[in-house]
Amino acid sequence: MKAFELGVVESVEAEHDGFRGLGNWRTVVTALERCAGLNVPVTVTAVMMTINYRRLPALARVAAGYGANLRVNIYQPARTDRFTLAYEQLWDGFRGLAAGSRLVATTEPVLAAVLGLRDFPGPGCGRSTVRIAPDGRVLPCTYWPASRLTIADLERAGPDILEANEFVAARRTPPACAGCPCRGGCAGRRALAGRPDDPDPYCPFARGERIVLDWERAGSRDLPKVGSACTTVVSAL
Image (tube, rainbow, N blue to C red; front, side, top):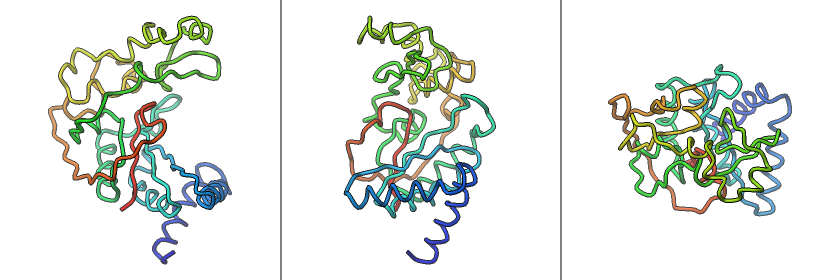
């Protein structure tokens, strides 16, 4: 690696271990190196939040050094809002990614809307994904705050589980978002905020604003689990 690249890796390693624990970065890198040696495709996943939203382009370059894409999820305050991005921080983070990477795929509704992606099928929550929590609850979204559904309900209903109230609520577009390109945005984000009938807090259209991102697209690829959550996959330039 070039000296600059080594500096980037060392910086990311220090930040990573400071959050995850000493030595965790080397454990991850060892796994990446093993997969690369076996020609097993991998993706590095990161959560965009207040402490790293400007560091993601550097992480995308590190991932590319191991032949991996970077998958970015927006932080959801399931336990604490300590790392919740402000509206301006989120779009600053996406501007940085746009400048330093190519877009492989996204199912993040507000981003797909801003980019005007004609092939965006809409959020998967309530439609194409079923989640089972460790306590046995069945959820339409990983971050759905409450559900009375259990595995027994899933066994009994099968595909008809999608007609349960929780799933219907997850795919309902708020009246205020009728006709909005983001299609209501992230239902889990709205539900966690306790405002399921309000627009997505990160939607610029609901604010009467226009966000412009000059994002280059990478070649189209069929990636696993892209449609199972609101996520964005990029490759470094």
